[in-house]
Length: 398
Image (cartoon, rainbow, N blue to C red; front, side, top):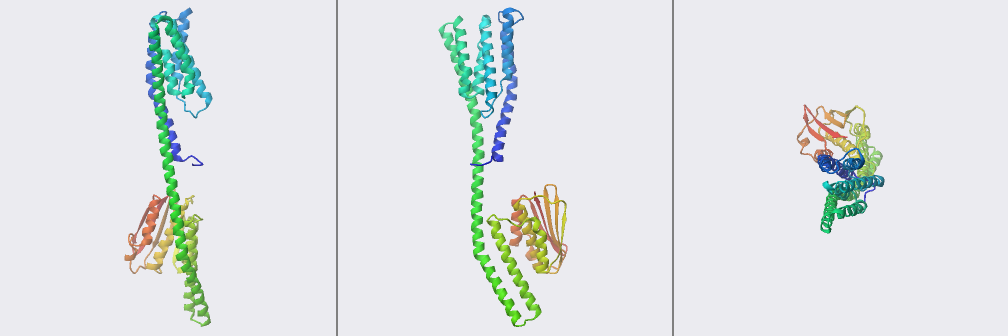
């Protein structure tokens, strides 16, 4: 069960409300036709509607019937009870006025106005609530019909009322079934999404466990060995260049261990590196790999999802790693540009590449993984030669 209603379920409910509004609009012309028929039948009755005595009562009943036809509106079961009972009162008045017309205008005898109340009650209201309207109206119709007709006609009139009531109830039930089906489908899709997220979380946990058991342990051992090599170099009075290389290799091993632990934490759902840490990452590449790289940020930063932040952070790391591997000593630029609805990342080096074949946009696993990450977020990733160097351009929606 969801603690909060999902957007998918809300959309299904909104579609049901919109459908009710649309159906109400479609019934507008039908209401006009029914009202016109009732007015026409009553106008040819004896006595005709007027403004004196019995004719005035007929006129009042006719007005109540016509107004009631247009006042009755579809009400959802979850709406306020007071609104439902307002509809019950309107339908009872509509039925009473229709019965009054039938009783007062014997020559225009017609059960149409009264049976309209039964049909509308069955179509608009829950069965038990609709019975509050249907039973008294049917009883009154039977009594009025029995005054001037035989038992066979009374049965026929009551059977007509039953048919109209059942028809209205079936129409209402069909609409409710459609709504329930759409809601169940929406909830089923939510459940499938939850199941997929749970499976993805389990897979991330497995990968994190394997990564920790293999890579983190290996890097831990490497860091220990490099520390021992550093001590040996100091004790053996190795050259400054050798000690510097060992120190840098040791720092890189520690950094790799830190990054692997951070990756394990990200896979397990812990805090992952995001856009805010790109300056720190660039500084690390300047310090540890000796890259000449500049960072520029344009526009006002916006909040981004953890997936977007991690993707941009990893993209910068992958691009700068490729610069250090294929274009050592090249001047590089990293730019992050914020604009309405998206963030753009560009990493470019300006030459120094000895061999660009290994940096083909489709040939390296790092670039392939980068493009897959960006694609899952609905963004674009382009990587390729630019002049004497190489550029990586990423655009991701935020």
